[in-house]
Amino acid sequence: MSYEAKMINPKTGRMFDQLAELIRDAIIVPNTLLPEQYHNLRDGGRSLQELEVMITARENQESEYRKLKREKAERAAQYRKQWEDNPESPLTYNEDENKLYAAQLKFVERAVEAGMMEFDDKF
Image (cartoon, rainbow, N blue to C red; front, top):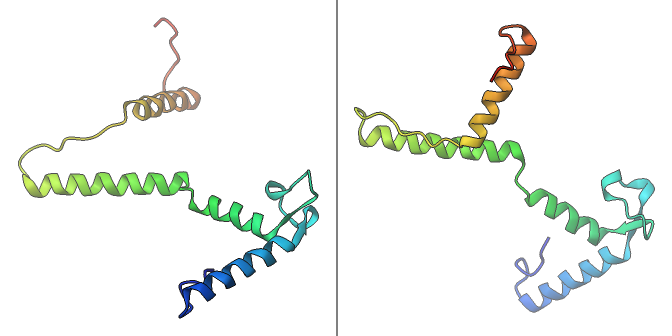
């Protein structure tokens, strides 16, 4: 939380921000109260400031699910634009060749496991 934007006097807001940061630096949370990924084995705990920095960095990272949803929405918008520009012409698809190949291999693996096809190692 930033006080600088909320205060009428920005200088006072910066001072409150610095005070809040110093307080968060002074409070140490022991490893026994923290999840495993936040443990600090050297000092036996982390300050609230360290935890805040770690959590903000983790929250700012895009998850794989969100990345896939974003890419899907971008492709859908591109296809919609192509269709609106010329509904008679076929759509041009942007395919990630590596992803497509990996998906095809996975499909064949599962089909062999399920007995839908037989594995032929002649090739």
